[in-house]
Length: 492
Image (cartoon, rainbow, N blue to C red; front, side):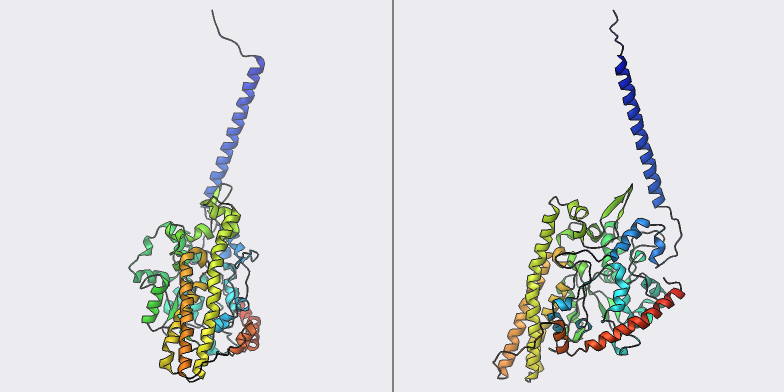
């Protein structure tokens, strides 16, 4: 007897409806896949051809709209953190002791927290540190080397002029050529968009250590393109040739030995007469001492995290603090809450800054007491140990302070460096006491009032109204002429 049973009418309709839903979903999936595939293919299809070395960032938008639009956001100045943010802040006003520490050097005039890459050219034109061509003292003008990290126009000018000639030119001579802010061609080969090194100093520094960075992996390149500029450097010789002091290694002490053996100093302090080393921003070197770099995390992993739009995954070119988007940076690896991760960073920064603040006060006092000892007739021989301790202390202070994000990148290392700087500042003050005692002076050293930026600058002899007036005239007269010439020559 047959046991086959016919489907009931409602069961047949249910099966038919289910089949239609499946077919519809498969259709949506196929359409989505096709759309995403077309989207991805269009990503790699150039719509316009760009000339090798093209420096005008806006021309990249047609081919790379997502990257370009996020890069434009580096102009944003609204991000706020407990320590710094994206807004430019007058650091000398916050910590006037720094005016004393840089007495005799242009940083005592003007030192502000950095803004995003989009502001690179504008901020260089406005700073009081580079001189005022056409309205200021000609001897005050900085070399062309100062432009090196500010623009994708730099490789073009190096090729046109020659590397050495570019460095030894005057900063003002290139004002109508260096006009596009840090952007696409600084890190990418224009034809292939592969990451590449566009600044020779990095390649030269590794070559002197026997390292061929042309063999670097893509992940390594995601840090090396940053290391072209975010490093310690100095201007070597009369030609002001940009050089990284890595020959002996990449620690703070390695650089110090390099400079000491070369008998190098950036300036003679106008109060204490100490031959001072001015640190730049050894971000890459310090980061290499930290746990993230040691575990293979690249700069771009945290400062340019991957993001997705539709079916396209790309690096967010809004380069800024990882604290601005913790969900796409820290939480990629760490499972704690955003607030906990943020507070972990702040805790490290607070501890480092506690030592930094003490060091700045001790070191400023050491400079002032050394100045007093000279006024009392101290000899060069007697002051040698004082100046040596001050030089070492200030190098450690500046190495830590000048580095962006140091207290997060390598908190243990930066705390060690600042602590050693504090110890040497205290040693310097002890040695001054001995020198003064030998001169018959045992009272407390009288110290000037440097409680504000204005008071500190007046004490070291800066005529700030004159400098600021010259800069205002420069910005209103010379800069517009530079831009007009750049537009006429199709540079922007």
